[in-house]
Amino acid sequence: MVGNFGLIRTPRILFGAGQVENLPKLLRLCGTQVLIITGCKSHQENKALDKLLSALSVENLTLHFDRIEKEPTPEDINRIVGRFRLLELNAVVAIGGGSVMDAGKAVSAMLPFETGVEDYLEGVGTKSHPGIKKYFVAIPTTSGTGSETTANAVISGKMNGKGFKRSLRHENIVPDIAIVDPELTLGCPPEITASSGMDAFTQLLESYLSVKSGRLTDALALEGIGQVHQCLRRAYSAGDDITARAGMAYAAMLSGITLANAGLGLIHGFASSVGGFTEIPHGIICGSLMGVVNRFMIEKLLQTKAIGVTADKYVRLGQLLSETQHKENHWYLRYVADYIDALTEDLHISRLQINTTDPSLLGEIAAETDHKNNPVKFEKDQLLEMLKERITD
Image (cartoon, rainbow, N blue to C red; front, side, top):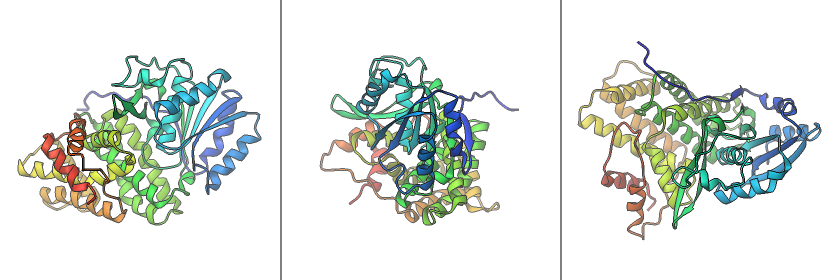
């Protein structure tokens, strides 16, 4: 019997090579005043994106531009909103990586209001966002966060002397349209392809294993993981392979849908806490810790001889990734851990550069690490052990 489930709304999705060419006619339906937010290098050496911006410039549109150079802060969002609030914009378009998607989403959601975005951040502000926003189009140029299909915007900042990563969240702030065109990722450098790809892989795997997962999200997550298995190494080593780029763009898009509905686990708990205390990029944190966290989970399952949903899911993953069907269950579980370690090495994911001269820092990071949706629970000393395994010497 199919059990009960719910599904958060997704954007209208336009997927495929050349789909970004539909943007001008879509914007004409909204109005003439358009804000385009990009990254500092979003259209450098990207012929498809450069062609798009040229096409937009000859339309009957008034284009305004701003940029996000790193993970967005409340100051970044408030600056952009303050600059454009009085222009009565008709649409916001974000073209770039995950940070640009989050910034565009937050700007779209804050333009109707005069208060700062920090007032609406989970765990920071005291207000609930009502879900009113400007029309928003998300166009990713990397394949990682899946932010083009999620209903939250991750904002980084400081509060009481401590760093934080918190979400502005409401189901209505999901993009109105997500244009996922793999041609726009052809200019993505190998190191960004690797870290963003490992972020997508992490999101798919964590949402698949999550205690909040369900039949529908499991199916989407496994589909995405299959694409990662087939395409990530190829996209990394041959950046002009459009088939590999399309597979990773599809996987990242699916990861946004699955995480929005099933939640994430311990690796993203670390990404939030480590990212709050350091400036290590999100994808590097996820990629670096993915192997060790899953190995700890798998070894705990094997030690306790757990037979249940999580162990069964790891077996299914092992079968998918090994492309074999007739091994013992414990072999499949260990294969998953070995597979992730090998992928981490092949993609040259760096270790974490965390200053350990402050003896309290790692303890603070562990204390701030949430893993409520993780199917396997760990004590603080085990979290510290995981961190120490991936800290650079």
